[in-house]
Image (cartoon, rainbow, N blue to C red; front, side, top):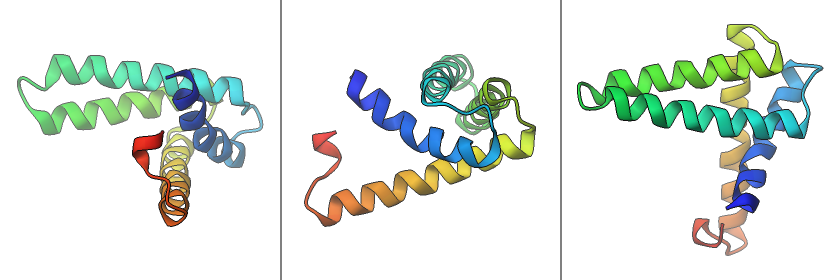
Length: 105
């Protein structure tokens, strides 16, 4: 689980380096952990009422975590999220192309 956490933090770290001079792998690991925790808590609290609203509020919470930890604005935190998603998709495609899938992670 710790290895998966480190691996999941790498795309966040790489994308944060594009938007913030204060980005480090340690901060990315904290942002990934706190972001997932905030998302899950808000999802559990709000999803009994509306799954869509829970998803939106959870995403905004993740953006706020990126904004706070990397000391960037809202648009930069959105940029970090989008670029991290793209980097993650590229990594997954490469792993699938060489025969490694998500089941091994």
